[in-house]
Amino acid sequence: MKHVKLMLAALIMVLVLGTAGLAFTDPLLELAVKLELARINAGDDLKQITTLDLRELGLSSLAGIEQLNNLESLDLRGNPIRDLSPIQSLTKLKSLNLRETLVTDLSPVKNLTNLQYLNLHSTPAVDLSVIANLKNLETLIMRNVMVGDQIEVIAGLTNLRRLNIRNTGVSDLTVIGSLMEQGALQNLKGLGIDAEVDIRDNPLFADPRSDDYAPVRPYWQNIAVREPLSLPEITAQLVYINEVMSSNGGVIRDRYGDSPDWIELYNPHERDVDLSGFYLSDSDNQVDKWRIPDGTVIKAGTYLLIFASSKDTVINGELHTNFNISAAGEPIILSDAELRLVDFLPAVEIPRNISFGRVPDGGKDMRFMTIPTPGVENTERGSYQ
Image (cartoon, rainbow, N blue to C red; front, top):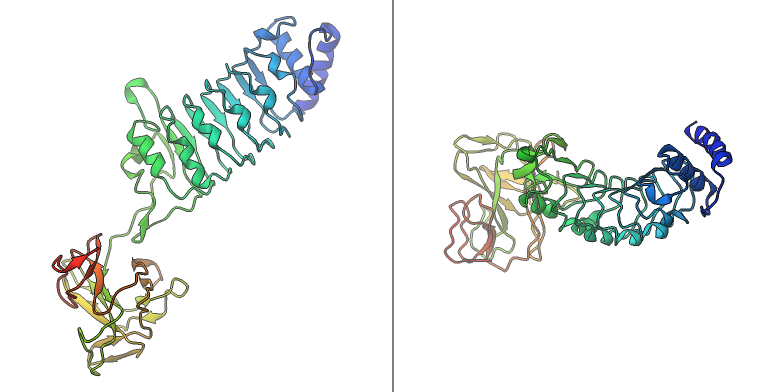
């Protein structure tokens, strides 16, 4: 309907104004320009046009728009446009809306360094490197654009106040956290500036294995409009996989007299933890590989030693899994009864009679221990990274 009304109005204006001095390949663009000239009572003086709304007009070519060299705001949303080269000389542009166009090549935008607003929502743009040149950007919308690792292009955009990267494949928020640390994307109450950030629908996770939200957590509450409103929390760590040995040459023996692999769990709390129905596994593809027997409890501040012997048995309280651990390296995964991740040790090649684990107990640092400590405190003595 909007398109039809514009056409009718524009046809009338053509009759009134004529076409002298105007040269546009796409007649719809020419009509839109004539309408704007009439609206601002500028005759045929294209230099007086500073704003042009071309939203959803069905434009296929921008040829001729370079004549509007005082243009500051251009809305191209919803047009089947592919070629942006005609706008590359419009260096006074401050606002550019390319939402839902067919643009794949953003290189003509490279020199539009006065841009403060850029909307790429749902465009098929591939190479985003030109964004790094746009140091004056305050708003950048890239929703539904495959950004991924190219998020690094925003590293120098310290004037950003609004950022939308919803559903963009971004899995690392480090560069965004760095910008926030420098004051970008943060509320500036003294200046009356409210920040706005949307990071939803991306492959970001918060669990004991990795907290992808860590770079932005310290700054998230100082964003007026934020999505999600609250970042996913990491559940309190119940138990740690504290120490592992995958090639036991007699460091410790089980009740059968054998020297199997072993896994040590640690309870750092002042209360007992019931592990009934929890799972241990050496495979990401089968986290429920071995179920910890009912009635298995780790006393407060103590350790539980489990032999990864493949014997799948319990003898006089001694636990044996149905798998062993490859010395070449396999992950060790502890999940709760609902198969939610509790803790994780990465696949690491561990030399014979050396263990690998947390120093100190329950800590973040992982070390090799030449003096293994099954069932007792891990120490730095004889440890290395």
